[in-house]
Length: 143
Image (cartoon, rainbow, N blue to C red):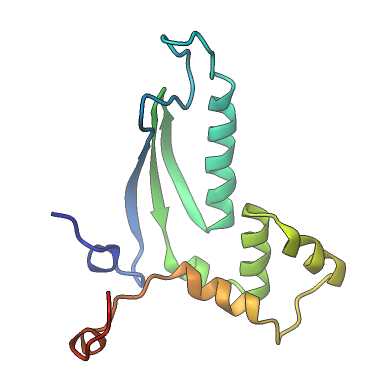
């Protein structure tokens, strides 16, 4: 039986996590596809670099990782105190580093985020999962 992350993980305590992501439908991350003969080995370095880049953006430490032909494993250490100490501007900068888009150019042109910028506060809120309160559910709230 599966459980929501909010029941398994305390957002206030540090922890170690083993994360696995697997391809479906015979897709390959890297290596040579036996059916088509295509080589995807060039992806291995990209995946390794992206794991380390995202770890820096999201204030987690990578203890080990393994990239295989159709899956990868990452062992992470999460310390909420590290992320909590970041300013709203730093959270927004890291988010835009990880996921650049049209907003990136707008912020770069301004050079700094204003304190009234609602996006920076929302970025911090999105980092944390909140359990659905039982009062809301008992009052007819939808899951």
